[in-house]
Length: 341
Image (tube, rainbow, N blue to C red; front, side, top):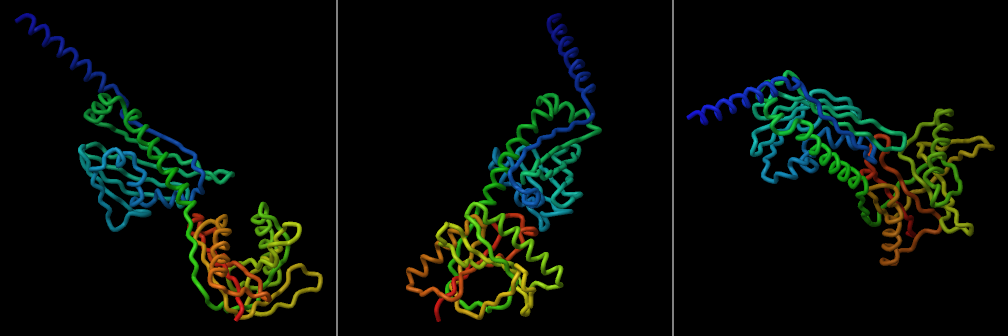
């Protein structure tokens, strides 16, 4: 009997000691993880700001395939939300504040635990990468929550590894999404033609992107200075892609509505393309995949015995603005090969 009382007394002391230990635990917590992803902030923000994307990179969903995720009508932006249910209970997440491409603030409620604040920060680096910081915090924690956290080894141990794995998966998904591309042979069609301002120069495969950027900058400056309004998206005419020295001779151009008279000494000139029959091929994806679009065009011409025009040079039109479409997989380039009537 004495032994039972002694054991009971020891258990009571242990319970009191554990209660005191739990009671003196911090009344708040914060877990933070940062990962550098080789992608523009806008692309990562677009993924994270829409809850319909979360299942693909959530480490919790990866570990529990039986988790039930419910998506409401609005999943993106301010007021967007989603909920989930697993063996431990039901949780909800809602976006309560956003700053496009820079930050997201969310509120999470899980089971009977107090709500937590979740935040994201996207810091664009000079090299094009982005530091993604994800944290979760809570305050005024009740005794039960502190007991759970203490018995499970603390919130850092519980959440930290999950954040790391989720950010790793997010990294992979975002980077791979930028590599996606598609080449479509649209077939024979008619190009309407028109006037354009242009500048001709030489480039190589290694510096063509930089040369194009410089060329378009000069053309746009000239047009702005002379109050010339553009009438379409920029394009490039390939005057000679097989020159003796290996250079590419190209004319970078911007469409205009009417013929423009330019100064005799100007390097920016006004050209004209007549209405003509063309083979059209479309690339959805990064400009680095353009050789594949041209290969598809040349293969189609050869396979179908199409005679390429010797008078009008082939060209490509960049149909959307990369400044407003950050993900290269969404860039659209139309390749036109003029053909004989």
